[in-house]
Length: 165
Ligand code: ADP
Image (tube, rainbow, N blue to C red; front, side):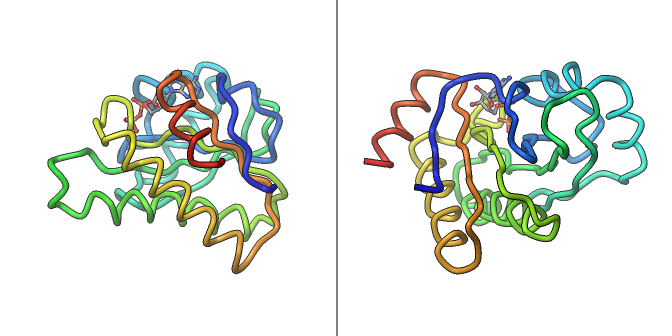
C-alpha cells in the first residue's frame, strides 16, 4: 500500500520530501510551518525570501537544510470561510501541486501534514476526504510514490485510519 498513515512530528520524517502547510508569504508562521522552520534552521528562511510568496492552492519547493528530508515542498491551503469560496478545490490543488513537484523531482516518498486543519479551520472530516481522494487518484494514474499522512492530533489520526480501512 503506497499510502501510509502515522501519528507524529513531520519534521522527523525521513522521506525524500516533507510538505509544509505554509501561508502565502512563505516567510514562516505558527503550527507546522513554525516547527519546520525551527527544525530546518535559518537558511530555510533565506531561501524562502527568494521565492516571492505562493498563491493559495499552489506549491513551491526548497532544500530541507537541517532536516532528514532532502526537500521541503511549501504549499498554501485555503482558509475555511464557510465552503462557498472554492475551499475544497483549493485544498485538492494544494495536495495535487505538491505531488506534481515531487514527481518532477523524481522523489520516491513524500510526507503531508493535515493541510488547513489547524488555524485555517478546514473541517477535518472533509479535509481527509479531499486529501485521500486526491492522493489516491494521483497514485493510480501516474506514480508509484510512497505517501505518508502525518497526523499530529488524535482526531485526524483516527479519521485517516478509518479512511484507509
Ligand atoms: P494551517 O494554517 O494550514 O491550518 P497549521 O499548522 O495550523 O496549518 O495546522 C495544520 C495541521 O498541522 C494541523 O492538523 C496541526 O495539528 C498539524 N501540525 C502542527 N504541528 C505539526 C508537526 N510538527 N508535525 C505534523 N503536523 C503538525
